[in-house]
Image (cartoon, one colour):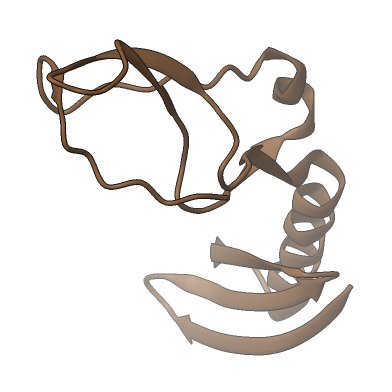
Length: 122
């Protein structure tokens, strides 16, 4: 992990503060420490936070572009039903322990789909 951004501060009321930014592969981690007792303490807490984020979170692709996610009834179309998908990929940063429990679902903006509908092919 490469720390590439840092801002420190201190006041008697707020204590020692630090914001650190680090790159880990293709993701960026940010740690914010407020109210530490010392400059060394804020650095150690930021290091712990960055390590914790690195070890416990990962980036997961939730949906693939163009992949079917459901089928819905369409009114006034050539077919009774159409397949639904996404125009783009969807990625999320999630706790590693939660990944096995992730489920995606969709909600239509309206009550029904009416032809014609523009399509984007994947």
